Image (cartoon, rainbow, N blue to C red; front, top):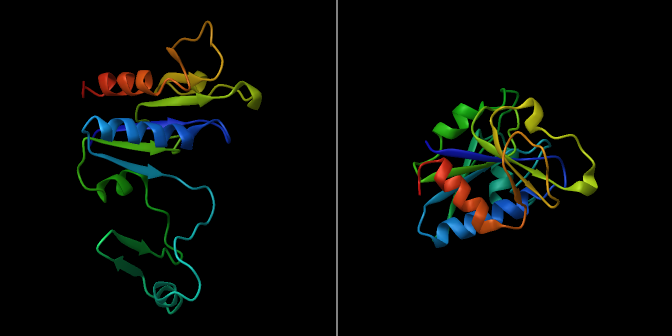
Length: 165
């Protein structure tokens, strides 16, 4: 599948950029899916709901369905977290999967950077980073730089890089 990632340190603008990328790409007629890695436990279910009660009772998987969406929750219950490759195979084919996080994977990606975070650049130790999206100009970088708020320019870069333009 066609995969492109968005990485960066905490509060670098990843999620806001992902939201703008998905909106712009779907407005252009592309079918987009996203995959987000969470470094902490998360829950999409709430205590007291039927599906929560099913999981608490020990179900391995709980599927919720309505006329608007469906979701499948899988409890690991001590099993290892699925690999990036395994997660991708669980997704239906689309024009492009945008990935937020999964810094250590080797798919092509861009690095979000905010000067105020004062963090080291990830691209310097990761040759799969193809573009820096920053809120300040980046001089002397070994890869291209674009303004973090230039959504159209970033989308054009990704689509061209992925052979979709």
